[in-house]
Length: 185
Image (cartoon, rainbow, N blue to C red; front, side, top):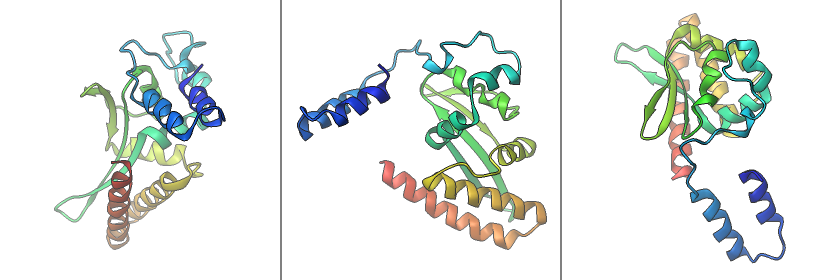
């Protein structure tokens, strides 16, 4: 039974009190993931995956959208020169194989390991455009949808040289990221 199924079972089980549910959910949340953990998505994969088509058979667009909702971020940073850097980052604590999405999105950067987390980040202009184009219909929901919409709009304005509009979006994104960070701590 997956953790998601276990959480659902706990939440829907009327024989548990609220306190028992809280304790059981906390235990699931704090349970350590083994170093050799591999996501169930890879159970039917024939490794190694060599081409983007091989990866597409395992990682569907809806799956990737959900993964990015949970583990991805779209950043816009201001440089001293009045210009902006666009950055896409994915951080995941386990299963380095999941970061093969870099091949799906054609991100040339290498995957780094920092504090037991795998990190894929890029500021590469072509890779950023690939990300914008891959998610061009904005399939995200909630805050991630707003984050992506603002970020991709700023990219559009950047290509048109409209620095004032990017600056406004930058300020909104900074507030949004602060709010998200505050809610998760």
